[in-house]
Length: 308
Image (tube, rainbow, N blue to C red; front, side, top):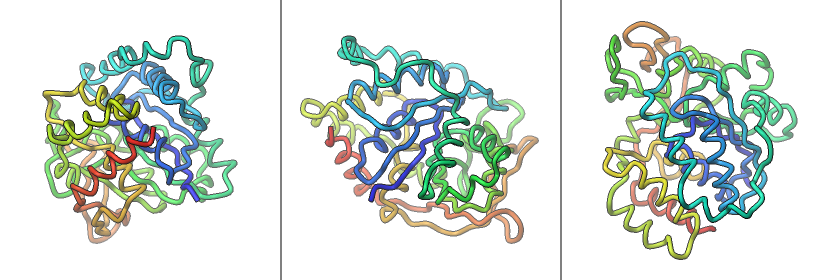
């Protein structure tokens, strides 16, 4: 039976790609896609997601977004990619189609709460952005944590340097956690099972030219491959990694990963805000991905992108 999943993300290139994988995977029953106003402009990424769903004739999941600000905003030049994705020339092919979902879209927190309130089966929540939406949901409805099987979170840097380079920060944090450190701590403190896909493992998986060549070879036959290739082309020339797509793989194909249970705590303020530290006492036990089968992951990715 397909696994019921909510995907909460912040609408950048790799977020939309990871959403695409969850939507296409026969192992997943995607219930909702909810956007945080993190590494995107949420209203723009919302429109882009609707166009993606229309282009690929997808169905089922409700798409929602929240424009509530995160405490530490992402750089504006990163967020502006939302406008470019929303205007991909590829989407001109859908001009005569009925858009996947009509209307403005409900707020992310409302949709997450509704999904968890009405499900009979505990759901997996895949998080590829700041944890702002989710912390809000569980602060208001803590009982809903009983309907979460696990969180699979792209975030943190445990035994590697962080990727936050801003004034007054020491560089120890990863952006998704740094964007809203108290929210991350709140989710860890729920004591719900967590799989953490940190920079420790994503640093092992750059998006290579060789992979993109293999993907391009599929674009003539598969629309999903064509869409994925166009999305990755937006970040061509940058040092880019399989951050969020590998998080999806950890949800669907955990056998590709090595996990280690650790106790971690989150620094919520100061020069190290967002830093994840391993601790002997206190903190929360999470499963941290430490290694991944690179070839198996890339094959997994390409196979899903052949499904439509």
